[in-house]
Amino acid sequence: MAIASWWGESLLGAGADRHPWVISHTGESRSELRSAVAELGRTFSDHGIGERSTVLLRMRPSFTYVRVLLALWSRGAQVILVDFRATAAEYEPLIDLLQPQYVIVSDQHAGPATGFEQEVPFRIRSRPSGVPTASGVCLVQFSSGSTGRPKVIGRTPESLLAELDRHAGLAELPRAGDRLLVLNSIVHTMGLVTGLLYALHVRATVVLPDTPTPSDVLRLARETGAVALYGVPAHFELLAKVKEAPSLPALRLAVTGGERLPVEVYEEFHRRYGTRLSQVYGVTETGLLAAGLHGPRPPALGTVVPGVETKVVDQELYVRLDRSPYLLGDQPDRYVDGWLRTFDRFAMDDSSGALSILGRLDSLVTIGGLKVDLAEVEAVLRAHPGVSETVVVHHEVIEAYVGGEATPDVGELIAWCRERLSAVKVPKRFFVTRELPRNKTGKLLRDRNAIRSAL
Image 1 (spheres, rainbow, N blue to C red):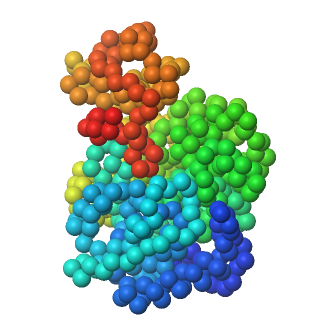
Image 2: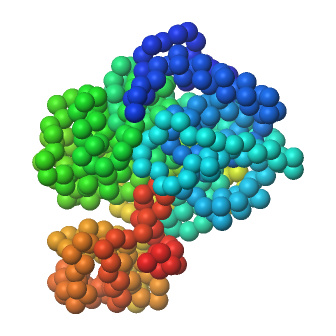
Image 3: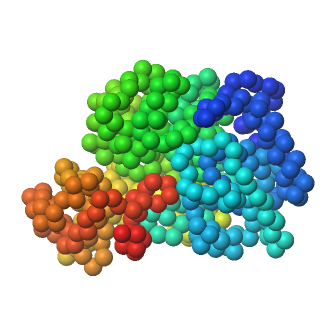
């Protein structure tokens, strides 16, 4: 499928439509979006951007960003998405690696982003040495890199459209006319596909906060009548702590993904708002894979969504794909004989097919001939009243990195673990701070060197 055809047929379609596709500072109708995209498309055409052009895009979350992304697709270009928070030292090596023909950035707009903006200036830089795409890939993303170097991942129009159809097949998700409030970054898979592109696909309205404070998010959810709220566990933890939170009578679905949902966040959010948090699971390589939209209690997740073929081998989840998603061909251990290894561990109920999240495959280590699951150690530490987040790694010995407002004493943490874990599982080194470092998608860093350099 040509990229331009996918854009025209599947996202906005034809004809005027006054229904808003977005609510933020203001609203914008689908017809207004179409007009803005068409105008940008002419601008890009004047710069020579067309079918098979490769464009690296790094822009702040805004109306402008969405229009630019869609206009590039309307021209048949391949878009390489780079997080707007990436520094020059981080994204310039990607330019050298992928050799895009064009780079579009909004660097002139200085200062940290504080939410979804309306208009941001951008500039287009042509790279005569750049290389057009020889594949049908329309979207290039990078894995979160929470456990090491990010992987370069390509998605085709067919892959994205199949994922959108998987979303549309889930009856609990919003439909045409519904409003869904998205807290996830729209540069990354959950915010971009599950939020923005899905809303365009089914004619729903996406609500994007212009200020990200918990009280403002709740106010906007109430004022807009949002039926769904999307975020990561850290978002819902903050929302559950708002002292004078408004009621959300329209809210019927709260969806979280990206990392494991702590039971205490699940329970507190339900107590405050009457809606159970529902977990979804996916990977950048494929998008949505499994969902528990009825809000099962963690670690229970739900079942594999229709249209996906999976298997669980030695607790690891594999996904059937007809092609490798890795553009550089440098991940031979992750795509083998048509199966993608997720390196995520699950238990599957034989009768219902329901999955329960166990953790990462690389969270299993051998100490003194005994298997130790570092995810179990993390769960014990998170149960401490003074701990809000933790990462446990193995480097010669078990190390625990602990975050919490109360910054509990190391001796207290050692005693806590000794009461609840066998001696071999008790961390030998503790590093306590108020807040642990996260990557740009909001996930806790799990690479030891990255953690230590950030602390």
